[in-house]
Amino acid sequence: MITDHARITTAGLLDWWAHHFPDDIAHILPDGRDLRYVQWARRSAEVAAALHARGVAVGECVGLAFPRAAIDEFAVLLTALHRLAAVAVLLPADETGPGFGRLVAEGRVTRIVGPRAWTVSAPVSTVPVLAAEDLVADGELPGHVVRPGDTATVVFTSGTTGEPKAVAVPHGDIMFGMADRLPEFADGPGGRTLLHAFPLSVPVGQWAALAPLLAGLRVVTMARLDPGLFLELVDRHGVTDTAMVPATAAALRDARPRPGTMRRVIVGSARAPMPALRTLRALFPAAELVVDYSSTESGWAGASTVVGDGHRPGLVGAPNAGCAVRITDEHGAPLGPGETGVVELRLPPGIPVRHYPNDPAATAATFRGRWVRMADLGRLDDEGRLHLVARTKDVVSVGGRKVSCPEVEAAFEAHPAIREAAAFPVADPILGEELVIALVADRVVTEPELRAHVVELLAPHKVPARVVIVDDLPRTRSGKVRKSDLPALLAPAAREEGSITGLLTRAVADVLRLDDVGPDRTLADLGASSIQVIRVYRRLSDSLAADFDVTLLFEPVPLATIADRLTDTIQAP
Image 1 (tube, one colour):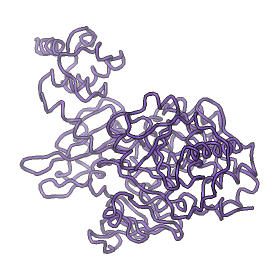
Image 2 (image 1 turned 120 degrees about the horizontal axis):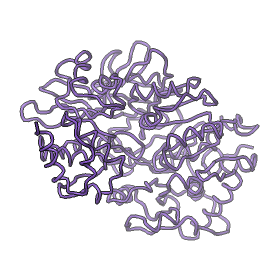
Image 3 (image 1 turned 180 degrees about the horizontal axis):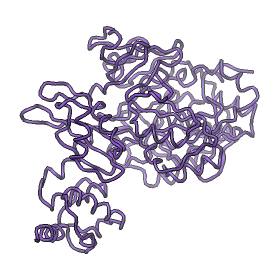
Image 4 (image 1 turned 90 degrees about the horizontal axis):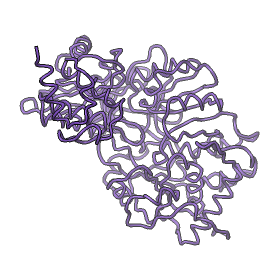
């Protein structure tokens, strides 16, 4: 029997699965243990009773800070809070700086729950912190009436262009379509297995935790992204489905093809670089490769496309079932096919609209009836497919002429040596803004070689004024490029541009992922490994356009002394 409780809340849905298929495996944990539906349901009820005994109230915002390795307890807490009609606020367990406190305040969190190991070193907080292991109690729970429009969770935007923003997600959003889908599972889960490595604090991490309930998937979670382990788990568990951001795909570029069991690979990103898609197509030749486009605000409303031979950069396809897409001008008036404007997505009928709980003005600007105004510029082709042009904040004005950063990035990524590109503006006293491109390369490549390549693809005013080669790009917790941090890549060079000391300290800072490195430091006291020293050598020799004896970098002397010796070496006849 399908009850209203099972239609409306994750807790009711969990009880349905536990009643009908108690011993089926829902989750396979990073340490090899599994979580079965009946274990999940019992523990969820137990934790709900313990939280109720501690006074957790209807609508109270409780923070959840769990690493991927503890996805079982995260799933338990999520459904336990929904039993109490409380709100789960998803917090990053790996955040240690002041940003954590900002998220606690933004999410209106009254208390935080995490694994005991996390609570020992948890960031300083103004609210109580509880260990999940201590939540043990018996007792009857009060019957709470949960409406589809009530807030179930609070998630945060990725912060790719600014500070993360809280978004309230209703129960009816999470549970959309389940009343119709449950009969599909009359004979049990569907026999498909999902592998993921998403942080549990991002929306897709929450979906992975609930996927055994919402989609009948057996979920395998990786505690960390390791290409070798990823492929091992695919083979060991007969993985049929996986989802990732482009940065994850890039890490798999050297793996041999896996014809095997994989049936569907989803790349979720506003921009999926072609090198990443080529990597996945080669790795899983028999799988359906899908680019999926949505946002924290839009949720179910989105677009997708199956990647074929004619796939072009920026194509994200037709709107999902029940959704619609339109392009509008700055005032919200619809534009025609081929015209570039702001992307808007319409929610399917029956889904409650999300909102910003702390910002009514921003809610009114973004959520317009059932239309969600995205932070992207795009255009529709004659077949109604959506092509993304840029983020609304991703268009640079160079000398009064507009330049789309994704267009420039795609041109550089078409070079076989480039894995990923990120373009960004910096202030220019004459032009107002100039364009800089940061590149991640798979092999040594020179700036003249890259410029010779892109001049065939870009108009002269779109060619970046500066090119920066980096080991990796700054990223959000979900793996997206954090564009607001890109200008910092230029800071060390700006301090001592042109000097060998400046080039060396910059190379060391980039390789060791430090904000800044003083010339009085040594590579040894910075903790540089041999591999990192070799990376510094490669970076510096490229910058100097000159070779030198790598053993200089292994000497236990300050960087300034190494720079002086390099100066003498390079200038010697």
